[in-house]
Image (cartoon, rainbow, N blue to C red; front, side):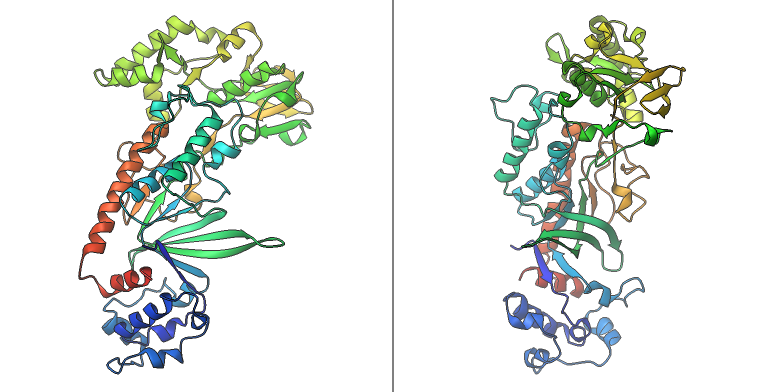
Length: 498
């Protein structure tokens, strides 16, 4: 079974529509059965006369051909047949998955298991590019491995409870190899739009392919029945604007560019942000003999990573099976106070609502302490308020303090890039997150799906991936089993099988 079929730009679309449907299909079969045939690169006006049977009737009007032979409504103005064949055009006999991170791989594995063809489009040159290219070296999974494994493929038994970044990347590569998943790399989606006339998605990309001497770009358009958005919540870095940052003069980088504190020894480094990344970068800088100051502009929940030998996350999951969310929040705060003490006296003000509710309503993940709090207590990590402006070699804070600094690391987070390319405004909100909260945010209309937007990490992505793969497989099998379809649907299926 072939997941997709290439339409070459040389097709004469008008000649194809001047045939009866049976002749059209016969000709397509003869060409796509031998994709390397020289005639596929020629125009179709002369060979058509030899392939049309004596029973086929050529009609003079393309519109009449639409209405009688294809038995479909006239094309709407926003569909231009010439535009369809102005670029490489590929029909995908199954879903297009955008993104080859953990979410995309999990969906692909589920589809493989059910025999559904698909294609994965990935803008980078590798799987899990966020993990491979945009994370610091000391990173480990914040949750135990049993909560982070993808469907139908557990972590190796010899992996520690909290696998390192490099172990997790190795796991994902093994996952892709095990399920024989081969994404289309270096392919950036420019737009994806649903064509209501035909009930299909049109996904336009820029494909970068390396030639003998240089890299070349070409436009590709994928036509598919289902679209899976698996680019996740963290596809683009967030870089706030600060007055005077351009005149600061020192080194400025986002946390996605930070690898380790080796090059910062002896420097005064301002870390902007106090989430898990900000805390870990500050800790790493401290361990490499730098002098970090961490900007804490808003309130934050700090929890111990473990409670009495068990993961705090595991404890929360256990409690939520029996107790309401507000009560679980109360218990977590009491445990945090007993284990960590009063963190507010160090400048880490807690939100007014509990950690789980805060995560659910504001999307802010609580910080799981892995050693940064001890450095804060000792004064090796300095907690400072928000930034007013930057000066050459300095920063002025909102409380009037002026600090001498050498470098800046922006641990200011990430956001979804879905609104920049998906031409749809019902399923996703303006911030690129599905409007319906978990567990109902995985399915939209017209064959649109989303995976990795649950704000519940890898465990939430895995649950969504299972639902998406099962739902698509059910629809795909129903469509392929039906004996009688509309002529347009049969047209698509005939093409895709050669």
